[in-house]
View (cartoon, rainbow, N blue to C red):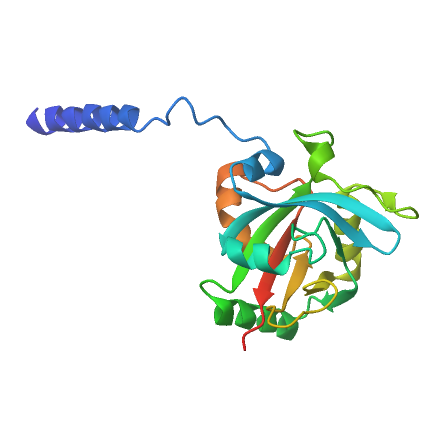
Length: 213
């Protein structure tokens, strides 16, 4: 009889410890990537531009240094942050090219790089009027998912040389890579994947690296 009793006690002990580990009531279940993004620090809000289309985008920081973003996404004319980023080049998602990006991230660690999650900007969000630039004539405003599907189809990441308009004097320079969902970008979204189970919403992973002298 004794072993059974001890087994039973062991089981009740187990169930008790489980009840103590219940998640706190205030952590509500996140439904999608946009909600997950809201738990991260907002780093940039503006328009990504490709050809004649612009895509309202929010970027939240996943890892790296916010100073890199503030330094490289500066608008020299106003002194504030740039509100528009134009994709002028593409990088094929070939292994050697991706290895090069990984090498630059490692070289830039810990404070010469940043990885961001880019999602569709909520229309009419708080202060949207203040933070959103007026769309230039000739540009058509479209949803971010159109840009994602374009890059997926091209099997490429979008590339932007920073700072926009070229470096002045002692400014640091760098590159921005905009990755559509792919094996490379998923490595930075493991925590989101654990939280949500699956990443259904269209998104991009943005890598910004500062050139090393």
